[in-house]
Amino acid sequence: MTDDLASALPPPMVRGKSRWTPVHWSELPGFSEDSLHEAWNAWIKSCERPGQVFAALCSDVRRLSIGSDQQQRAWMVSRLQPFRVESLQGEAEGLLTSYFEPVIDASRTPTAQFTVPLYQLPSTLGQRKPWYTRQEMDTLPAAQAELRGRELAYLSDPIDALVLQIQGSGRVRMVQADGSVRMVRLAYAGSNDQPYKSVGRWLLDQGAIQDASWPGIKAWARQNPDKVQEMLWSNPRMIFFREEPMSELDASFGPRGAQGVPLTPGRSIAVDPASVPYGTPVWLASGGPQVTLQRLVLAQDTGSAIVGAVRADYFAGWGTEAGELAGRLKQPLRMWVLWPR
Image 1: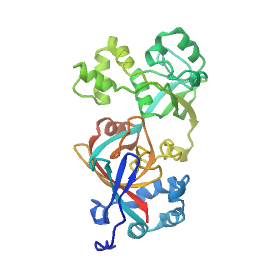
Image 2: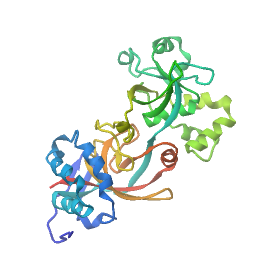
Image 3: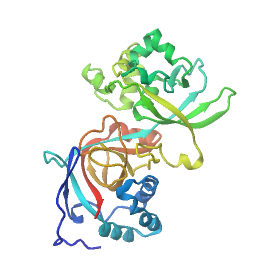
């Protein structure tokens, strides 16, 4: 693979909240070392709903799924143009965070152990915007009446419920009414349209903790059970879920992101779609105390906190290890969109 530094570059582009500056492939750190076949699975998923710009490339993407890294790299260089993503003010460095899919035990019916409900969409959600806050849902009879009968599952720990709501979906080992256990996915169905407030930030501002990771928050909650409710109420946003069955194939991918395709651990990111369209292949570079990443990823999701040009949320996968990374990852980011020539 060669990169002709003498070749003319196209003009820069402005896309929503971002400016795209064309660069040569040699600017992309680690481009010759990435195991592209890992990303190809995510790209094939994007080709299920590719959008107009990338649809023409999908036959090649599928054909190259059995190609070598060298063949995939050569094809990318011939068909795509890298653009460095910058803010409109010219800032090329932003923020990388991470999210994951929790794996949690739950019960179909309330028990002495499982007391914390997760809800499906209330039928009156569209009639009142924003809908009731988290505190109002816990205290107002009118809100509680709207939620009655909308319980999907019960968890044993309110912090686990909050983690599930913030991540937007989760795998749940559901104990059925007859005692059998079934693995299901609780997927994002909607929100109460209230603003998201970080409980970690609330605890830091109170001087209650110094470690705002989920393990740190859980440790504080065990030591301060009488203050947990106040902490939860500091975040007025509530997420509602829908239940999805999980086949063996479903279990090998993450939940569906905003693009409408299943997420691939380590190869899917959430972006601000006003800056980077869904389905766009992105070269991501980030180094910090948690992890060093130089790799091809696909923009397949978004989130309420993912706003701005150089901003991405990295899908780490599911389970404890992914949760540890997602809870601590917050480091500098550079990114390049790879756009059809």
